[in-house]
Image (cartoon, rainbow, N blue to C red; front, top):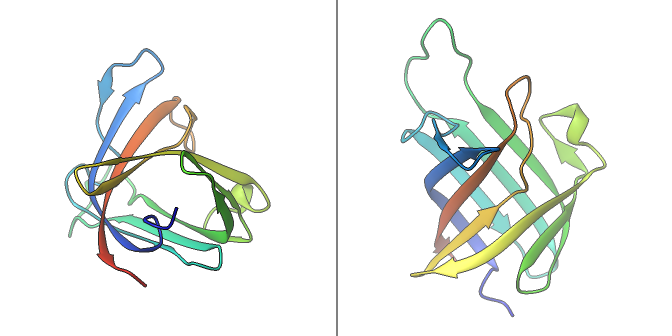
Length: 132
């Protein structure tokens, strides 16, 4: 399977809490920039940021990036993190469930807490913008 290989742009983000109830999506809600690159030789690089021009005083700008070698079995993407913005992620295995819907790649990490926020499960839809 090679349809995952390429450069992908983030087009939609949703999040639910531990009870499955919709919550405010991360990375600025509908105003985000995200790219993920999956190479044919097994390297991943991903970055997402809140793209709002101004952030309210009570908030901080969400930003996340990581990279490393990956494996993909057609359903699960596993990345061994060797570079990242969050030191706690260094050396970890990042696991994403993967499906393909209407030409989009859909990634779902497991339910987890991000920073000091309660646990949530995110769903991220990616559109392929390049085969490289």
